Length: 333
Image (cartoon, rainbow, N blue to C red; front, side, top):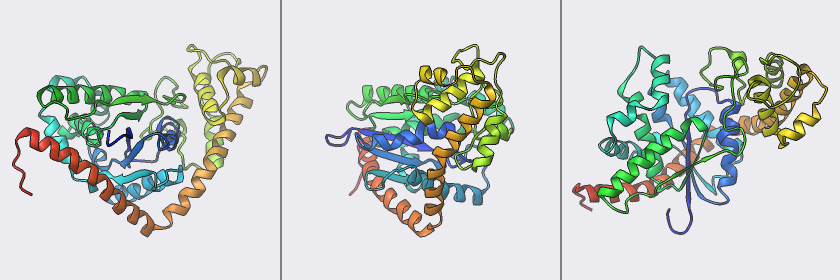
């Protein structure tokens, strides 16, 4: 916490087209946090390089992700919007926290196992230790709450463990953060395999709805979505396909599961899939329009990157200096 206002931090990787899972589980909710918290929203490009990136693509996606933040209604006057690699304190604190993180803790991280399986030819040290950099991202700003999808809760728990360990040795250094899950749409599942999470890296393009997909593409993908046996539109763990569609429809309309079940009582999967596609396309149309406007002004985006990095650095330096002093690093001003 800086002063009286509590702090919220979150980041999105510029490593591919963002999905409605990223939007519903995280980005859409960011705007409301700025009314309650001092908010830091970061384009985490240093995390992205744990997987090999084409440099030109990484640069382009960094601009695109920042434009998307702005398009989703994040006011730069109320939120600190910046690019991670422009604030060197992230990497510096990341190294320090590596020395307070146990090998066994990192080896238990589910995402490391998943990504190692997907990128067997590039199981690098960064892939193993990136939860520590994530901890540095969070702790650098004395963060109170971290809006995350359910798959990132394990990393926030590790961050808490690291912070508590450091605080036991060097008291009153870090605020202990808490993960904050979206009320709805915590986990949007694949349209082709509703047993697994929707992922921007999925090779099956029909499994994923991207924030920037055009209307016809969105509706086509929902029409092809896998459903379950039977025809009843009911939220049920035994019906993961239709339950996922109900969750998406609920997120975009604000209707409860019970209201949705009543609305589509007696109707078939075809009608329901079309309706989900239409409300999704309608909701994303405004975001897409604003996104194109922001992306067309590169100078404005770069000015925001510079301004955001300067503001983030101001807070980051305070924490890093405190940590370095406690560790015994020589500081000459």
